[in-house]
Image (tube, rainbow, N blue to C red; front, side):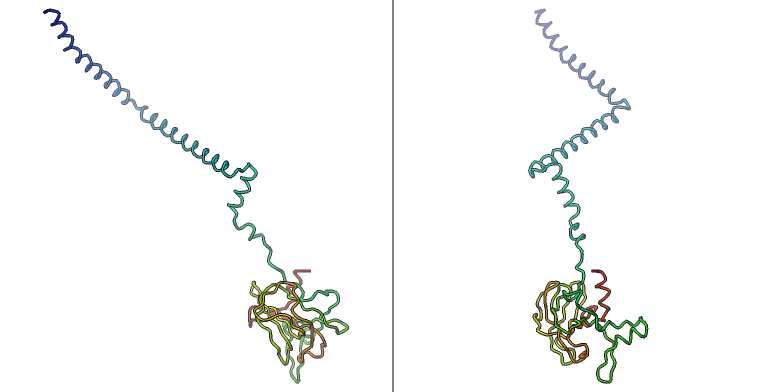
Length: 245
């Protein structure tokens, strides 16, 4: 009977012992968390873990990207440059410069210059065209061979043929409009080889030099003009040729 009482007392005291241990553990954690350095230390540790995970993730992503494409260090640099500079090739592409509208550079001469309103009186008089009883400023450049022979007339720049006409005064003419907004005009032509709306490249033959009524004293020649847009003001072609010399 006494042994049963002892067992009953031990069973009743056991829960009290567990509760005491739990209370002691809770009290210890409260004292630990009450310290001022606990929360800052915990925050810094968590931040360090997050940053470490981010670095690992980024490195893994780079490794996967390189592995899929099979790129070495040199190839990776090339890909990066091509992505960061998508317009590099376009920006470095030089614009097409105007060339003389004929191939025989040393064989032709200027027989009638462009009328420059800022030039001297003597130069301006030399650039006047007499037609009937009227003197008209010459708004182009006339090229001819000393032996009065014909020659091939070439497109000064690439563009689209926007006019092909036969005029009783200036003769056969061809007008080409270019991507930079300029328009080149070729007059006093023979044997025209292009049609309206045709696309021509720089240096393509478009006609032969011929004669016209307006400048009949020049014999066989090419009258060449450069205009600022269709129907625009004529400008001195010589300024464009100087860039190619």
